[in-house]
Length: 352
Ligand code: TXA
Ligand code: MG
Image 1 (spheres, rainbow, N blue to C red):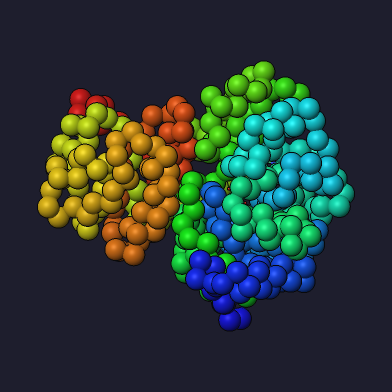
Image 2 (cartoon, helix red, strand yellow):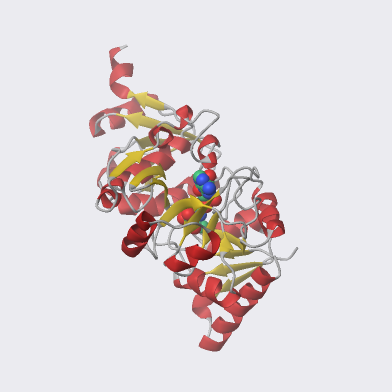
C-alpha cells in the first residue's frame, strides 16, 4: 500500500478542507489514517467497525486484548457509546476537551473488538483541532491508539508515524509536533472515586480537585508488579522501549555524573538537563530534556529523544530517575518502562 503524507500547514483553506474530507472518507470506509492529537499521534479508524479495529491491531502488531481509546468530539457524545455518570460529567467539565481518558461501561454499538473483549470502553475528547475536525466531519467516533509499532516509543511527529507505518496505512495527516508529547491520563471511576491507570498531563493533584479520592494503580510506578491481571491491559506489555538499553539511575546530580564518568561504556548517550550538558565526558552523546525540573518539556521531548537514540545507534542511554509527583509522574512512568523496570540505586552500588 502507498502511504500519502499530507502537510496540513502548507495548504490553502480549500485544500485543507479537502484533505480532512479525504481522511473522513477513509474513516467512513473502514480504512485507517494517522492523525495528530495534543498528546501523541493516533492511528485512527471508525470505532463502529470491528474490522477497522482489526486493521489497527494488525498495523501496529498489537495484541488484540489491549483495548483502544474511543475519541469523541464533545463530552456528551459519550452517551452514544457508554453509560455516563455524574463524576464523568464533573471531570468532563473541567478537563474535556483535553488529555484525559475515562473508562466507562460500554454500550453495544461499540464492537467487542474495539474494547479488547472488555465490557468497558475508554472515552477521550481530544483538544487538537485536526482530530476534532476529523471526528465531526466523518460522523464517526474514532478508535485510536498511539500510531507507533507496538512496543516502540509513541510518535510525536508525522515523520515518526511514517517510519513505523509506511506501507501499512493509506494516509497520514501532518499537523506538526504534539504539544504534550505523552499519552493521555487514563482513569477508572468507582462512584466519586478515581484510579489513575496511566498518568498524563492531567495529574493526580488536578483530579483530586474533582474526585472524592484519587489513587494511583501500583503498576504506574512499578510496571513489573502489573502481573497477569492488571487493571488496564496495556500495563502488562513492554512499552516505549528504544533498541538501545535504557539505564535509569537513582541518585543526586553529582552521583549521577560520577557514575557515568566511572561506568559508562560503548557508544552511549545521556538524557540530560540543559544546565548539566557541559559536565559529561566528551564521548557522551547529549540528548537534552530541557531545563531542570521543567517536566512539561521533559514529557514533550522524551519519545522524540528515545527515537533519536536509535537513529544514532547508541547502545546505552543513561537517564536520571525523576520524582514521582505532579507532572513528573507521567515522565517517570514512561522512562521506567523504557528501562524495563530496572533502576540502579547509585547510593547502594557505592556502599557495596
Ligand atoms: O493520548 C492518548 O490517549 C493517545 C492518543 C492517540 O489519543 N492514545 C493512546 O492509546 O495512547 P493507546 O491505545 O496507545 O493506549 C490506551 C491505553 C492502553 O494502556 C489500554 O490498555 C488502556 O488505555 N485502555 C483502553 N481501554 C481500556 C479499558 N476499557 N479498560 C482499561 N484500560 C483501557
Ligand atoms: Mg500506545
